[in-house]
Image 1 (cartoon, rainbow, N blue to C red):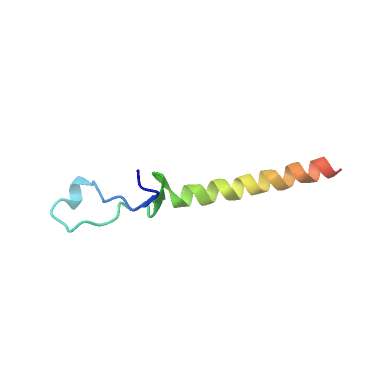
Image 2 (image 1 turned 45 degrees about the horizontal axis):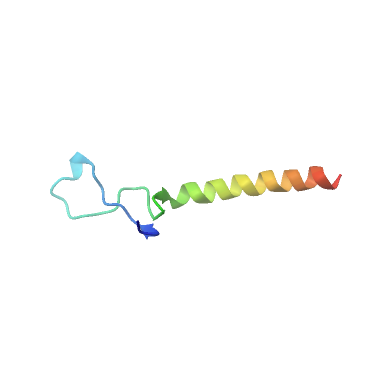
Length: 56
């Protein structure tokens, strides 16, 4: 399994076109990069809230 990849489009409407990305962008271990960034932002917010609650 590649660490970083861009999957090719499998849409039937794109048959006959040159290979191109699938619209999800870069993937890391098969997971779209935008999803990883979203999860990190949410986890950071939860972490900050947990830290604030623990300090009080």
